[in-house]
Length: 355
Image 1 (cartoon, rainbow, N blue to C red):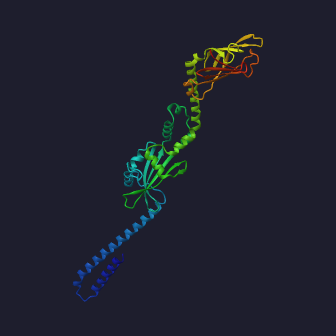
Image 2 (tube, rainbow, N blue to C red; image 1 turned 135 degrees about the vertical axis):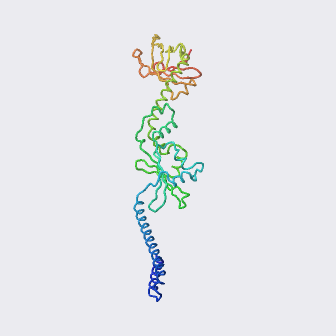
Image 3 (cartoon, helix red, strand yellow; image 1 turned 180 degrees about the horizontal axis):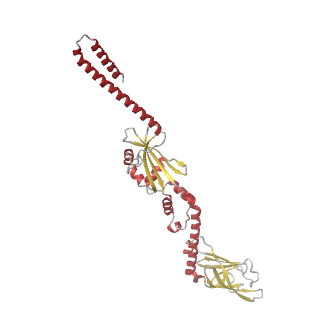
């Protein structure tokens, strides 16, 4: 700026010296005219320069105001394009754009560019997680379709969850680095940059969703499994008696006293819920009385596997007002030596094997 002012001053001095010289007036006209033209040009340049400086100051002032808030420059700007075409160190087999834009569990995505307060250029990605789709994926990965179909909807894990990732642009405008990443749910932030990006690149639900599903559904799944196992066990019991019923039916002999024993019995029928027995008992006078009993039984197994191997443990309480002293008496049927053994506790206190 000073050099233009000095030039203008020099031209003015030249004009003054020409005017004071003893040269004839007609010879002064051309130098005076050239000098004035030079002064006009210099003055114009000074005006332009001042005008340019004022514009710069206004621009800085405006920038200072706008960068106090996050301002989106473009949704599809050149910096966004550069980041999306780039790769990250932990996985260079796909681009950032391919990994994030094609993540199957985002229902909406948004890219933006902005400058922070320190004039750093930032590219930001925000993805809103499709929670119902994520939960369905986790449940179907862990359980079979019949289990999943019985599960309720837990609304507390359907809250909107967003993933926010920021990339810092280097000053060359041709490279970038990962700045931070976060999972945000209802204001909570979970900062695990590498872990988060790894999950997204695997195209699977976020680990946090797995944790939420496990916590929310553990009790429901336990109840369903208990119900399913109970149904399977009941079906196995029916199948067992349908297959092995005949091995129980027939006459049984007292293993110790034989025909001279106090009790004689015969099994007339048996199924998963009861056994029909014809029990003959002798009193102290050797007088025999026969009782037809229908005894409720319980096939005591925890799983179908023993039944598949023809292993069993059956017990039933003998409840009969017609039999004297029958209180606390019960029947046990179990496998021993290849065949069924019946033990009548209380009434006969004897073991019987099939005749």
